[in-house]
Amino acid sequence: PFTKYCSNAGTWNPDHIDESLLRFVEFSYVFSKEYLIVADLQGVKANGKYYLTDPAILCTDMRRFGCTNMCTPGIVRHLASVQDKLKMFKT
Image (cartoon, rainbow, N blue to C red; front, top):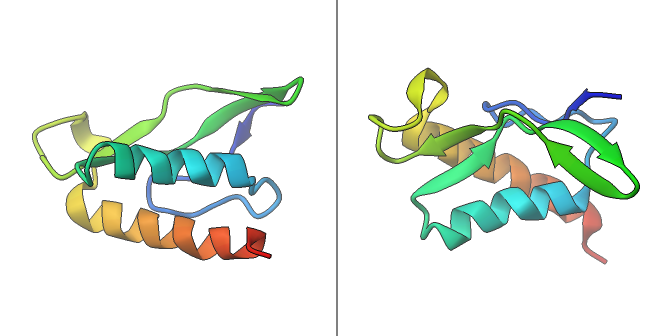
């Protein structure tokens, strides 16, 4: 079924937290050299793969990516949420 995994405000669906999604979001931030982060993940998981649609991009440049861009404060909040959730997977 179609599932909303996280919002662009950094809230994660507690029934569908997956390390690979968290790592993907973290990767987007690191790879972009802290310029943006992928948020608002939603879609379908089938055969062990995620098919994500319509993500939001939070970017330090407020002129980019439309009204869902929560800029630097949104990036900070979303990244903190990701890092907090990743603690569940550390052994």
